[in-house]
Image (tube, rainbow, N blue to C red):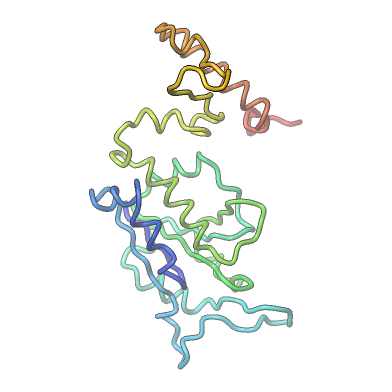
Length: 228
């Protein structure tokens, strides 16, 4: 898989790409990540990529031209899945990560300043938001996407079972987890987990996962077509 990130601040990704699972996935050629600074595609003298908005108002708006030129420079941009990272996009969920992990080439476009020229939206396949809040730019959302996607790629995590048991993977939160010591300050590990009865352990985990989801995120238990 190849992920291309269009950003004005490629240096922001250095730490994320050089640690943990992403670092290993890059080293093992499971994923290729390309950083493209679309300021390099600005044609004006001062490499300016933004301008004042038509109609007036505060802030600066990203111009369409350098973003269009950066996309045009990519040999397979037409067949890639192009994602615009914006607070106006659909809320990002685990099913989106699983879907995007199946693509051969994913292009993430990071905004900045006051926003994009509206015509940028015509060049992408979808718009994604990581939450109902505003960030300085799309770089941190891009990091969220690449982390959630890469961990789903075959070989990125040595134990694929651990991925399938993550929160949200099957639409629910994860069940409670414990490790040694058996007792800590009066809090004991549930007896079923040390019983050795794998059928009962699995039953307990399913029950606890659904219970936790019902208590903390009941919205996850609703079917998409189910009305309140």
